[in-house]
Amino acid sequence: MISVEAALRLEVFSRTALKVYAGERNLSRPIRWVHPTEIADIARFLSGGEMLLTAGLGIGHDPDRQRRYIEEIAAAGAAVLVIELSGRVFDTMPQSLIDAANTHELPLVGLNGEVPFVEVSAQVHESLTDQRVLELTTYERLNARFMHLLLEGRDHIPFTDALAEEVGSPVVLEDATRQVVAYSGATPSSDKTLSEWEHHSRIEHDQANNRSGKADESTSCTRRAVVLRGERWGWLHVLHDGGPLIGTHAYAMDRATDVIAIALLGARESGARAAQRQNALVSRLLLGDISGEMFVTRALRIGRDLRDRSLVAVMVCRESPAGAGSEDALDELCRTMHIPAVVADLGEHTLAIMGLSRHSTEKQVIDRLTGQGVRAGISRPVTAEQLPSAIDQARSAASVAAARPEKAVHRFDDLGVLRLLASLAQGPELARYIEDEIGPVLKHDAKSTSPLLPTLRVYLACDGNKSLTAQALFVQRRTLYYRLDRIASLLGRSLDEPDARQALVFAVRGHDLLHRQ
Image (cartoon, rainbow, N blue to C red; front, side, top):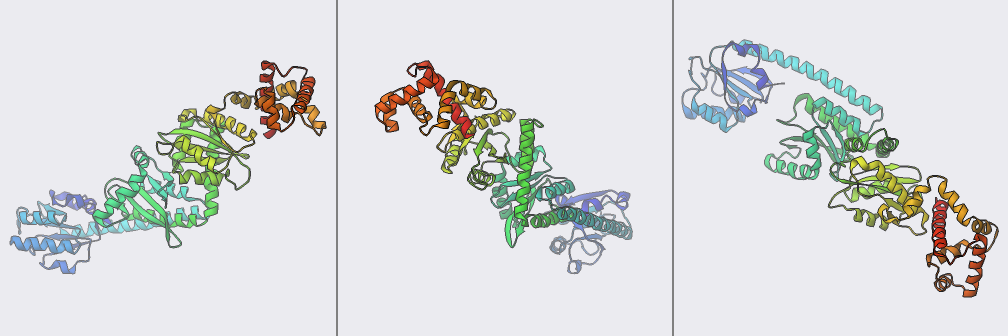
């Protein structure tokens, strides 16, 4: 089909001056057929989408009859009424026709001279035939392209990419919770819409539905439901300006919706691919292939909107493949808190880069992680360009968390001197320091059934208070004195000196850090 506007640009209409008197906003209506007519009751022969050509013989000069004529053909679905104003019936366009056409939003066109109606029919029908052939060719191409992607076992993102390329507009795929899972063909305008996605998805479409009765269209967006096994999985949106999607663009959207549903039926495989995309993105950041700013930009394409937010890196120690510290568990936690995040599997740790807001604070994240009973480290809130440093901070905090017997979430800013130990643990310096300070005690414990390191650890924790140490160890003071003398003898130094105790504190904590790692 071609639009009224496109038909009026054909060569035959260039032979005389024409003017659109009414219904200009509906010039995008499609024309299905051309029908020259001079009878008054033409409306009963129409089936919709016709371009009506007339000299006005069937309209007459009575204003009431003219208004009724417009009302009848508009109700029958005529696309446009074209009237010759050559003097055969009308010299000028009657005002009653203009008023009625405006009332019914029917495009009304006047020709200031005669044109052969048979040539109008021929040119429009030739254009319709050419358009139909083009549409069929496009349909075959679209089917082949989507089928190729489907047979390759692709996930949903290549389909949204293909649709965005086809319609020339941004495409967004959201799930049933209104969270974006794919975003293709980004523009500054669509980026802004994505920043307020809940409002667009819930409010704007509901308002459009109340106005027009069409649940899948708003003034700037067309959407289709993605249905799996009879239930709506989510929505596919095309963000566009102007009128609704028609022709091959509408077909492309319908076809994309169908193949996305088929692709999503393999939920486990699709989820694995989504995880691979996040892992690959994080790996590129860790390797320095992309900057923090580029990371945020690329995260948007897979539905993780980290823009204009304080970012934190969270490193969770994995204690079982599918436990609370797993990739799936951390991803689900972020979803339930409505926190955009990129989650990646780093082997012994799971890393999440989260975007905080005033509704989802750092404290809330820590509380939820603590409630799940995990060992984890969390960085300072940072900007995008500081993301590499944030990951190092989270790693240091997680190493301290792993060294502690109790399960807890450690903030990088709360580590104190442990920050230094965690940093030294990455190289050989800390191990050498431990060996220099408490090596003889460790050697003793390796061959003795009565280890001395637990006694030294508690004594240092009690800041050298022997009474508190004896109570904490549930031993008599005489037993404690013997053990402390034995430790002092092995180390060749007095444990009563504050500087000596401080050096031993670092050594014991460093030993615990390396031992648990």
